[in-house]
Image 1 (tube, rainbow, N blue to C red):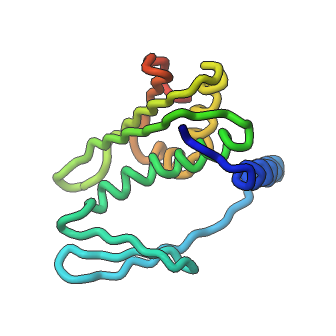
Image 2: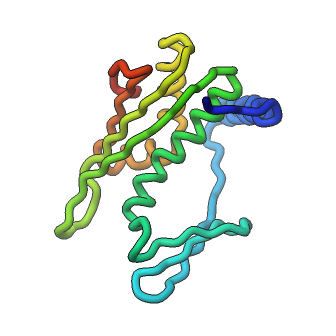
Length: 166
């Protein structure tokens, strides 16, 4: 069971109200700064400006491409949490699998990214479909990548394959 405490639910309700006001105003932007430092061999360390936290890519860990693909799943997870907590939607389990097809020869790029959402919950199926749609449509990474290559998502709810995420 995925748990959202009351403090988190309240923060997400306030956050969703704030985002709704941004949507009404239109063309509101912000920024994020990430600093990457080169280490030995294939090691690199990244941190977000203003946070006392870092993550590393090196030969025995995730590749930068794995981090890149995981960012789509992690970004959508944030939006699942926002919507589920603010709308009191209970989630038993949520998993997103992301697969990217890329060109090894020049020009190196992803040609398609496919993700699959496996959602388990006792909530109404239509409500869960709306949750998946909201999480995908609010995701900065999904929206940005879809301008560069094919990005498609599919949804399974309680073991039943439903449809593409819209």
